[in-house]
Length: 230
Length: 230
Image (cartoon, rainbow over all chains, first blue to last red; front, side, top):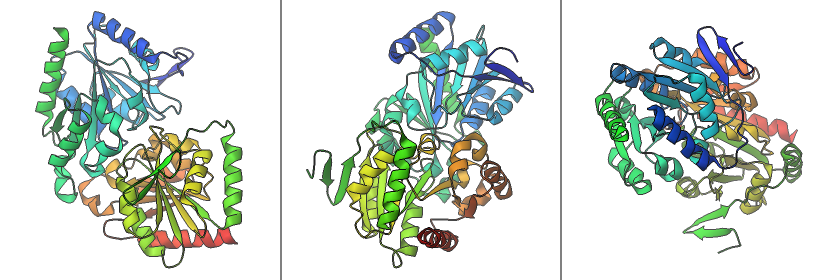
């Protein structure tokens, strides 16, 4: 046991997140964003449905950017440490956040994660949010940018059905493009639907499994970090 | 406008669900279950991630069972009426439930849907819950049985990550088995993981797109309805 709410499971640090008691999440998110800015930590909030490939995409992102930025990863999950073990093997600083059944992270819960990760010299912190297209969209985590992954097998109609998620994301990665031939997925239509929700959102097709398109995504992230640093 | 909270959108009835104010959901779920039993309405609660194929599976289920049972469908969604339009074309009684951003249905919200559907002579009512593996699992809807769909592209590790959903389901349909060759999905492992959460859960591989396995699923449902009728 490291503390009342943390423990080591093998080589993985696990933090049991406590439910927030603060009503004004937007205010707390702004505070966290300002603090991280001061510390030079760019926080990316990565969201998606269960099984759309967040962890594999994250591994590719680490591979592409780990020589340029000191990276730290927070893996939020209801339970299990499957993803955190995979990330830990990539050699970056990482922590598993257990939400104890909670379906999203808000700014205060994210702050607990940031403190647990001990950001120190981290320049790019990535929060892998709970796999869910509904609740995580409702809470500003204090992240610098919001990214989401929609995978080809989920269908191109998702921006119609989960409007808020697509509205709040700065970038939408369309993952698993290697299986496009086996699914009725219309790439032009999905772009139209995404832009209906958020005209400024960047849409990037990728295949995390093969690495296709990861260079474009890494470049987007590189530019965003440069702009944010100003 | 049909009522304060309902309207017609073309040929689709849309009901705006009101948030529940009742604390004791379990009690209200038991009451709804008892009432539906008396009316002879078997209520199936169908859950899954976004894009796992709930609507296509539902269409196949209707096709297989519509000559045996009078079927009614409630399509719950945050927004849009994409699915309800598709279901309406299959000729069964259907209604679109808009949750207004809410990530699940509880028993009282389900009751609003049942009343909106005007179950009357319906024998099999199916609730297509919001696409989400977290929140819908936490609320008893009053359904006779809980079913969920896990699709092959989502991965076989999902019972490890979303324990409650798998624990409360009586049957788990493994959908999109036609794409098994293109994904690292272990059918034996997923059965093990499901049974770790719920040893009594039935696991049925299907392909809603081609119809494979639908006969097994329809037979399961037929048996459950017969047992329930006693």
